[in-house]
Image (cartoon, rainbow, N blue to C red; front, side):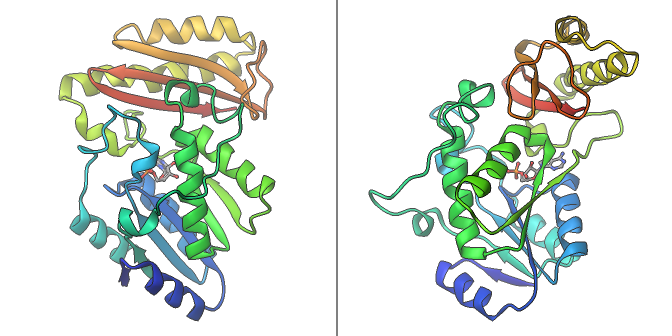
Length: 274
Ligand code: AMP
């Protein structure tokens, strides 16, 4: 496996690559969720590039940028074992320039729900992903459905800007008890972790209700809120279509149920695609 820290080296290495390139952008502290993206990329492409970059521009002031978990050596071993060809680990100073051209997330999709709670977050995401796409020039790029809004915004970015990359959505990987894997789960104390299970349980409850024929979104949200009684703060429970417009009734095949909560100091998101 080639480890590349330098932008010019990445560009030179890429220009020598023949065949398809699968790309998995991450912020590191890799877990089985990331691994499922990497495996999928490995199956579907001649080459696999993984990037690790804790992107400063997608963190808001007061968020966890400084304490975000960083595990370079463990990440390197995971990538090596998974058959990654290139691990790209650029420095922030070389990724960003002074007074640079900036992209903006879509005015609606980039500023509701996560974008409303974290204004500007998705501007940082589209900016860095576009830069990474231009450096890696992937055939396919793999993103988790766990970050549903990010996935939909990036899908829209490649459509709107005619970027020749196929975005591949990958299902959320969970612990056996239902907790969605996240690099931020390490912040949870054992007691908080137990309470955090309310999130996946509420989504399971929603899924059962829909399967039983309950399509009224208010009724589903009330039931979900009840299941999350032990959660400190429910930031939102929302049931939207694929364009993130709120729905009165669930539309099978076009619905995402989204939850954002805080357990202790830790912010968690999860969702269910119906
Ligand atoms: P991150 O390192 O958190 O920026 O995540 C990098 C990629 O991994 C994103 O596309 C995430 O959506 C995806 N990802 C994170 N957690 C999971 C999970 N539990 N299952 C599947 N994909 C995930």
